[in-house]
Image 1: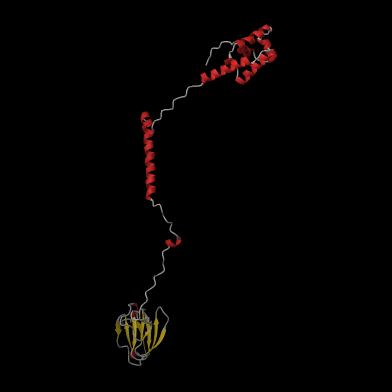
Image 2: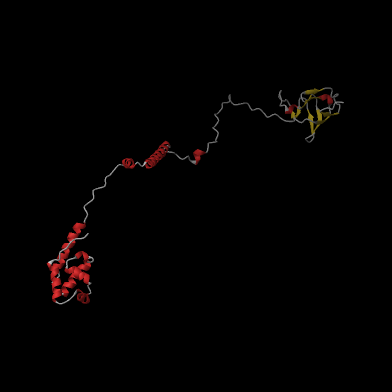
Length: 265
């Protein structure tokens, strides 16, 4: 900014003293090494042509003392210029910017894409918050003990003597005294009942041979299907094979050999 300046009387005194000494600005430059344009600016009070205040004040002091003139009046003129210059350059305070609401700004600029983006963000945040609220706040992490089911069976209630089940002996395989009336299908393939004491040698095809001495009332059962039988008392036993009775084995005391199943001739 250009400021019109009129040389002050104090500055003119410097010029008049220099001229009275018969010195030109170039002569002063050679003596005190201040550029001629700065000498002329000080003499004409053209302070806006001078460098920074620190250098300018030093130039004024050096030049005034070189001419043997008091430098304070010129320094006071320069300080007055600086103060006036600062006031003119200080801009007035700007009014605070007009504040608009977030949505008003978008509406003013018609930024529809921005409004859409904001709506998407709000909806996403709302969905996340809703999902977090649906999860229970206090979720106890199951411990190892609670995650493993208790496999210990409950203790059975105590039974009285009248409630205790009767102990039934397990049925014998092979020779039995009095087998139950009903037998398993596999065990009823061969059933031999002794009416008299009888020696037997029984050889299943898939098992080693067995020798028995059945007493009256004893029985022999087997689930095998193929047998070779040696009987020492044919009239002393009864044989059932696959649910059918085999008749006419022989006379008491007669030794016989039969094959089951019998081969029809």
